[in-house]
Image (cartoon, rainbow over all chains, first blue to last red; front, side, top):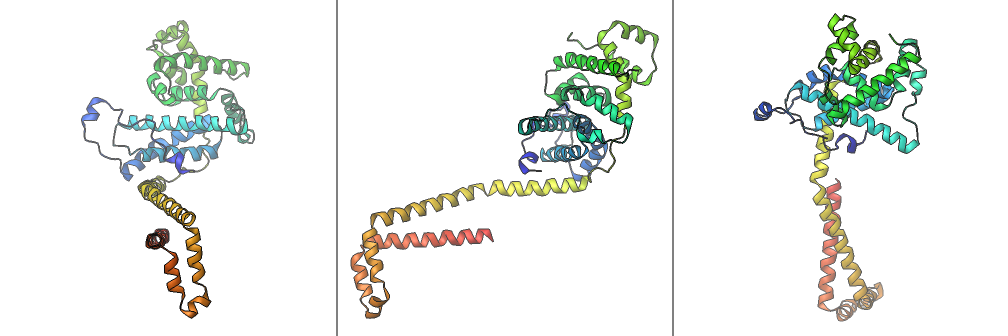
Length: 189
Length: 161
């Protein structure tokens, strides 16, 4: 893990809080609060990264980088929801950066299911991951955030760095695409 | 197409849990967004329940410590950057000084160095002959440059330690 990745400037400050929070004195996040926040969110963030990348080792690495960046951003004891959004946005950026780098450096197509999936022992899990990995990374992120994290369109827009108004259309297309794939593979409910 | 359907979260919940109210079912049948959401919601829920994490996550206290330690070393690196720049500038100035002096007064310096051979030193004529070949300005420049070189070298060694 290189220092430039870990200490890259924070994409946005955690101070994107409501006016009431801005008026409140900013207390830096201490270790105990970080631990509590980490225990609440890390599992979900790991699953999110894993579902986007399909690689458990990479998910471990990107999870660490995500939280390194989070600590490095000198977060204040803001609303838990803001901190969570910051973490998901950072994780999304890191995953997309990884896909970009992989594509540029090795010319590897980003939509191929990784070797780990093929070696997976659980057949159902294998099938589900294979279906999901056939979607584009942004579609995977959209569907996961909307259906699993229960994020609103505004939160999704913030995490993916897109306009809030575009999320509705993008999400609709992603759902349609997944629906078609499930029907084609006989996995539709 | 830009306004979010207010029933979408309810439809997603209903589709995921399988507990539909009649009005919601009617709405989902007529709203394309909600129909698309309802189509994939059960699959997404069962997909999210697949536990893929077979090992424990990194310890938060280790992450915190590592981030703080690496943050400190990055801060030290940032703080020492001006000093490093001054040091590089000093190396360049001294190197340029030596290059100028050697180019400008090479013949005088060569003659002076020639007087320092062991034979001349033994006869005691080295000092007088040497002083005669070098002007006071060159001699002072030589001493200053030599002192500066030694100081910078010492600084580099001590900074390393």
